[in-house]
Length: 314
Figure 1 (cartoon, rainbow, N blue to C red):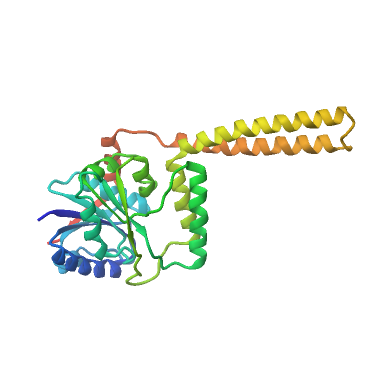
Figure 2 (figure 1 turned 90 degrees about the vertical axis):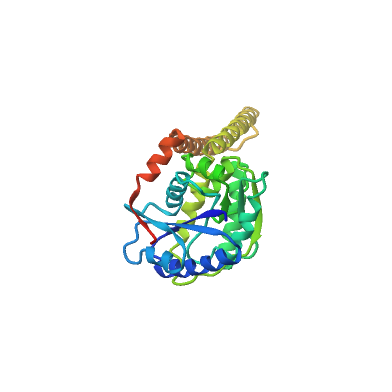
């Protein structure tokens, strides 16, 4: 029977995690699969996931206790680095533990990566539960992301990966920044499956609007080189436009066709626009230079260093 690791970052969500383990056991039986739960406890203090929830559900696996809170995406990267070091794993599923990623969809995603033509199967949201404001913001963000990077990002963390895809992502320094963007940058052969989003098992989401904005910007950071290239092209075009505007203003001034102060206004506006664009390009260059490219073994080692303790289900 094939064995699939289920990586799930958990932060202060003990109740939802326990309920998800029960649902996973049902799916494991119905789909004739063997799951190994890899719960990454992202520094929880009040309601950490309990390893007993795994064994009580009749599942196998472990809880990776991180030394501190590192964030959702880095926690996933730690899980990937850990799974890449395991043997006897036929694939991996990444999902949230709160119920919004439906466990019933796991067999669908797993079936898709059995094809030799696919490295990863991702869940493209067919039906969302979010508010109108969130959907509007998300639509604007997708277009903004496409404008800056030239890429499309229509999926989140819920995905199934082949062992080869796990190894590749575990060795990329972009993975802790944004897992979905890293999948795109890794040029993995992916298939998008329309899957409805579920509802939370318990509690409320800790994701705020500012956190969502930061999460979106982190996806852009993964493609900082592409953003920088597009900014350079825009600056060249802008410089040409500024030069033409200044030339036209000077000609108009010489021919006496300009009103008093008009040349100064045009020149100031054009130079201000050019300097602002140049500042944005400089910031993008600085951000892109922060991501030091390291070898895959070193990236995995750094991720595993966050693990303080491993608790295994009996």
